[in-house]
Image (cartoon, rainbow, N blue to C red; front, side, top):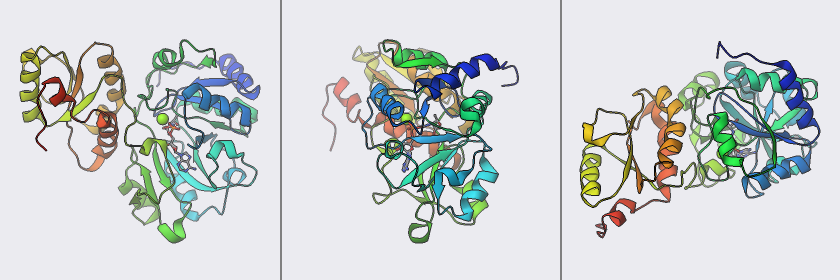
Length: 343
Ligand code: TXA
Ligand code: MG
């Protein structure tokens, strides 16, 4: 981001639009967000309408580094302060008990609130300009509900081009992390301990190293997070994820059946299987993944095949997103080959 020039007059225009109740899309280091004044219920409702998102899914409130946490949350455990000190600004969202003055609209009616201080310089400049740095910007990812999150300003324009709902899109280049923030729930520490609602760039191990407790994986008892729905982050073309050996066979069979395959892979592939190769490390893979899914989606293929990346450790976040992107496509390969799956 070193070559990014920030034009303060553009940032100020965006801040005034937000203060007037308009929607402004802005870059963060994870993905682009569709922002609204978190304390303006009508503006927050406009986000839900623009995204086509169900009303009971809470949105994350983005804060400037200087913003006091206790304006937004109450009963704040010491662990929250420690995690904020370690990872903010950065790709971590904390779920805390909601302060009474926070509108219901933000939290989908729940008694908790998701808070995050992003590190992207444009996001930070916007948060500092908005309401003198004292406000909160409610922002889900700037995509239609269930679709792939945007990692470029162009992706946001593609998502909302036909709408007049988004007043402004701030362009801050490619989001560096590329997948959504890690979400850790600290709102029920006494009974449940910390719970990892969504894996991301900041791993459960990194969180445990700061608070001395390993976050448990989310279960059905955890509050509802839209990113935890089984089918999510999905392109329009069906997605299937396979190990290299199976994948190579599948490609042969699909080609023989006259099917068009778009391929995302990590290992070297034969020349006949031209696709998009992603970096073999988790951070590089995550950075490139959503742009690759969007590019493949535009190719008119019958299926997007993704070579399974490693499953362990820092690969948890991308595996989670790929599993959800592929979820609605169960049986797609068999269907394209007109054979019955062996069940
Ligand atoms: O990286 C990110 O987190 C991006 C950027 C824009 O900051 N935002 C993002 O927002 O991914 P969204 O709305 O697409 O996903 C936020 C997730 C949702 O699954 C939502 O349900 C969950 O956070 N969430 C927000 N507040 C919550 C709460 N109080 N309790 C449980 N889950 C919550
Ligand atoms: Mg989202």
